Image (cartoon, rainbow, N blue to C red; front, top):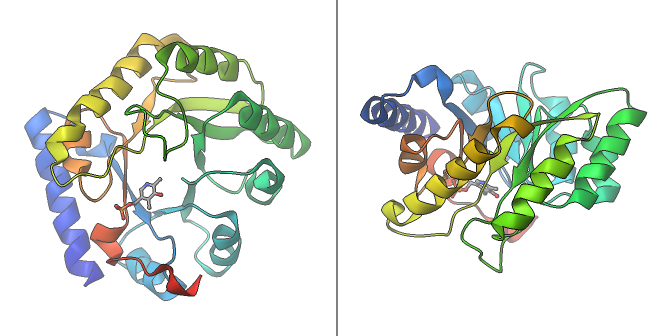
Length: 229
Ligand SMILES: *Cc1c(COP(=O)(O)O)cnc(C)c1O
């Protein structure tokens, strides 16, 4: 099942790149493996997946030591400051930095561990109350400026979780807005800013609008069962 799903996703990614004149090497698939057992991650790994996304620190702590060391782990979920110490320097990228307070706490922990942590700032482009981050673009511009000054962080770009929808076209406007914000603030990022956007329902549209990372869970591993966690 994972094999067919992965082939399907890779085909869709290739087509979205062709449609938008982007290079396939500029788009990376993050296999979102939250709630899934390590056997399934191993299967995806054997099929070529090397980037995995988790949203809970505890799950990262359980899975990282028992899976191959060349996996690039991505923290995509809400992060509490008291748990930063467990993942600092061990995850390739923290996608979900939504406040200056959290950024400063990660910066402090990175200094303690003598490392530099790559991060993204999470933007709530659609302003949904159920999501983290804010839709206030003035506040977001200030947040980007403030975070860019922290010495032990590398601000690589922006991330958003778009609304759940049956019609991915509805999210195109939000992906465009994220790209616009990144372009407007380009000078504050460590390099040319990257965008983490697009999930199972809308990743092809996200790629057309400039996504560098797409985060796909259900489309790769199947529906999640939250019953046993
Ligand atoms: C769960 C999750 C995903 C994957 O969602 P699917 O719809 O299953 O592809 C992507 N991003 C974040 C932040 C998530 O929490």
